[in-house]
Image (cartoon, rainbow, N blue to C red; front, top):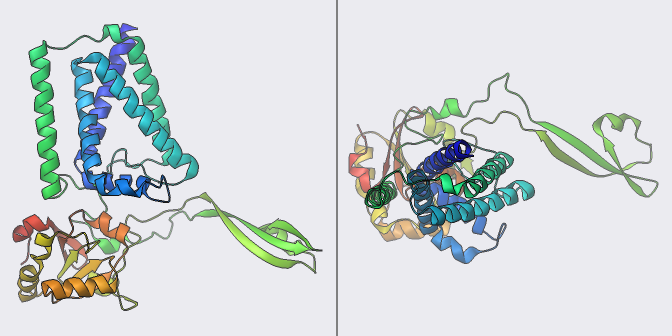
Length: 366
């Protein structure tokens, strides 16, 4: 039991620290997941959405600290109870996501390790069992250092996490695990290989025969009665096929998609603001100077937003912006970049640089 307890202590502690740091590297991304859970389509708690970012930062810092405190054996009972409460909470969320297919990626490990809802739930069940073992063997959990040493290490961990959260919120994630990281050839990342596996669907047709609705599979259609009347067709995904890393990027202006032209440009600057209503005022004030600098260097400059045309026109007028904002799906824009607004330079469709609006003066424009 002593050996098992120490194994569980090490495994759970390291996993909580790893999972917390992955999300702390990109708390904005984790807050988007909380937004989904709080939405009307899931738990219908829209009043909590404005607190999503604050809750995301608090949760991931607590996650890291609990892992550290478990390894240290510091405040043993409090640590175990908080671990249990947190894993019960996450187990409920991942089960809900998996069973009702509401949030298809819980973001347990951010964009670094993608898990399906059922994989996330299975992971949480295993952690729950391990934490219950820790409860049973808690007498074997001894402090690594004296009280002063454990307190000092915990406070250092808290300070380090707080600084990391402050840094990534005011700049960008330290490590970019997303499909749009620097160096990505967007055109190549959108391609589907010829030999890529296709999605497999179970297709069911409903026909009315002699006044009674009956279901037929594809192979049964050749034997349809002559008086059969078509009612409906349903497709059920059996096995998902290959999906390229980038599959939902569009740059639409007045109903026309200009994505191929922008990706073919020798040099292009994308100004990404997924929601202009929520964009930083200071960030919007950096746009004009950057646009002029890029245009003088021969860049094609466009804005990307999910905001509707009335909001675009209002923001352009308010800040005297001389550029076109192309429409792109909001989820895609949140994936491309976390800052609102942010800047991305392309050369023939290859991402050369990305900057938070705080760091726009360091943007590589040449």
